[in-house]
Length: 302
Length: 293
Image 1 (cartoon, each protein chain N blue to C red):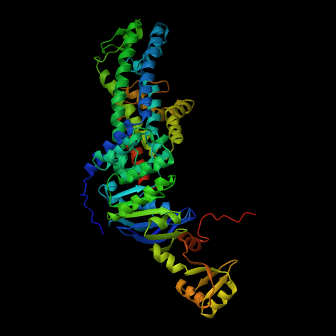
Image 2 (image 1 turned 90 degrees about the vertical axis):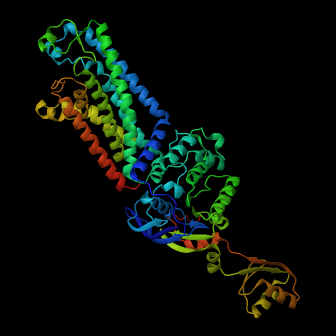
Image 3 (image 1 turned 180 degrees about the horizontal axis):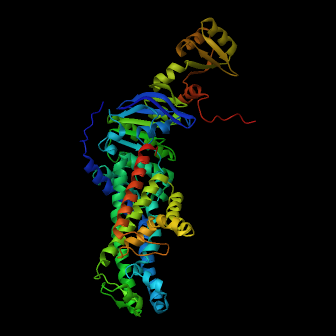
């Protein structure tokens, strides 16, 4: 479990993380969402004791990171896949990490095989592609078989097969009872991978909930319906208490379930050409929630 | 909530594992062996070249030159060149971690800053000591062989200054000459302490170009500028600067003279280098502890 309490960090005039508190539970994948520049990476660096908070505290399994006996055996992290010496081979890099934390060096071969890099283990990591670098970073995180895992944007640079592999891996790790904390600015990816969410914008906590609740609490269930005689259907639905919005060739109906709409259409002998439950995507909810919270906002094209 | 099953680790155990890790890191980078190989090559090369020139011109040298002549220091002349390569190596060991970002991976694995800095200094210090002693003893043996081959004559070490001044053959020391073997050893120790100073500067500056610039200024530029000032001002400063301490450590003379003035007693010079290295590394540790990685 990771507990963050009242975490604050400023760089000069910029407040990167502002009184942030949340906990990350074991056994599930927790997504850490926020636009670019919202403080995700800064928070992750502070969890690993790399940056010092100005205020607040972080504990991993009840202890400060610097106090862990063998940190790599308790917390595995992928922060920046390129944060390694380009002149060293993948195997030597992992061997040095294993030795620093009294991890059996047999694990080096095991994790290289696990991430599919065993054939390039002797190649210099400077020659690795972004995707290979990510795999090596994941191998390093898994080296000490830790109970807590942090991944900062792990699917960056991966091909579709690699993305699927990471998604499955994260869920498998969570199923083993591990604490899995994954940051991303890609909501669609988190919708598929995570069960819990910690959402931040401009360093502040915006939401800490499950993916389901996050969507349900912030969207109104909407049904999209079309018919040959759209005007008659619109009038009938309104009479029965639904709110409708007329679009070019269909209606968006709220405050009425899909089933009820079908029955009304049958009563009125109106043939439906479409009747679909609209589910708001995590993306849309996130965009609404973080509107104006990004560090850089793009304007409309003139 | 998961309970930690990792047993507590004593600091000594953390330190030995950090040392093992740093040793793997330093030996698996090609630039380590390129730098150390170049240092050996430069030192031995210069220790062939300069003694042969000095021996050739011995008979025509002034009395002052002959009085300043130190048969131990001359074959070690290549150490002066080797120290530049050694310094660059010492800088790269830490600044390459900062330029690549690898320092964050390192600190996540070894979050106790003192242990990390201590392990790095230990590995770098021992590796450099071994190579530096190879450099100084090889340079000395090669350099004094060149002197003998150029008409030099072996001394017993009990000769008076007058004998040295009037000798028609350039005096040559051997490792058996009193005080010589230990001076050659001290010269290797100088390179080791110097690289630890550079390592400390690297931890403070965290940037390759900046660290090397400060090192070169310390070894070459500042002594040259001070040399242009009146001796009453420059001499006390120069004799306490690392490059002069290096000359003093590689000398048998209790108090010999250099181009710019006097040198400290060899053991006092050694002690001062130890103090410099300790102070710079302590500042480096202090800043490593306080700053964000």
